[in-house]
Image (cartoon, rainbow, N blue to C red; front, top):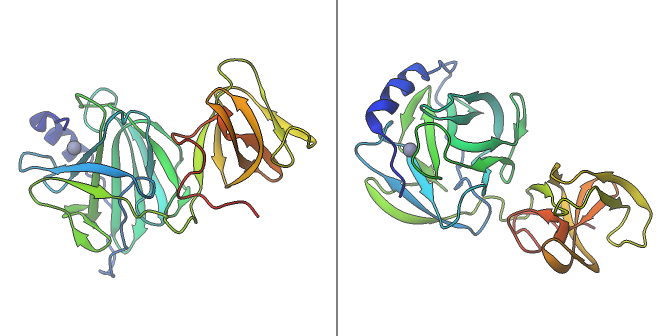
Amino acid sequence: MRRLLPRALVTVLVAAAIVVPSAPALAAPVFKVPFPCGQVWGGQTRTDHSPVNAVDFNRADDVDDLVYASAPGMVDLVGDQGASGYGKYLRINHGGGYTTYYAHLNNWYVAVGAQVGYGSPVGIVGSTGNSTGPHLHYEQRLNGSSVRVKFDGVEALYYGSRNYTSSNACDGAGTGAGYIDTANSGAQNLYSAPGTSYPVAGSRNDGTYVTIYCQKAGQSVTGKWGTGNVWNRIGTNQFVPDVNTDTGYTGFIPSVARCP
Ligand SMILES: [Zn+2]
């Protein structure tokens, strides 16, 4: 587990205690582990953490792994504290006074005002801010105060480390995300259906971030990430080979639906 430097973080957290409009207590949203369906992440709580109810998540080679919204809501804060505190972080407002925080991100996938749901990628794991290695710092707050984290209605382990398996968007209702990856060999053609014999329907430059709405088996092609027959729909009638999309997965993404 990567530890933060608690004393320094306390100062920043006070500064970051942005007032959330108070609201009558409503039933808490059903929060999910903030990673794609089926992934297993080590979650650590500890008495010297700031705030003390936060959870730090790690798994092997987790830098740039996708972070998902843990419940539906609206992104109401996207911030960068530079080399201190949270670094790149964001907040999702779930209504009823409930918010969640995602910190030390390498990058954001959403802007303020974005409506998100289970399975919505909001960013990628990093080590920005006051962090000594890649991990996700995660908080649940009620009316601005950090509360003990629950997943699927069950309180996390306080205090200690255990594995958490994500049930986030396991119904396949989520979207995926990734980057066009042609290994710097130029723009990637999009096709109106999952095969190169279909009409070209635009192109995307290498390195472009894309949202994946659904996936479908089609023509087997060879690309940056090997040979495969999975295609990603990234727009209306716009398909790109999964072997030229860096999604963090090989082939189908568990939380993403099959295209009709
Ligand atoms: Zn932390």
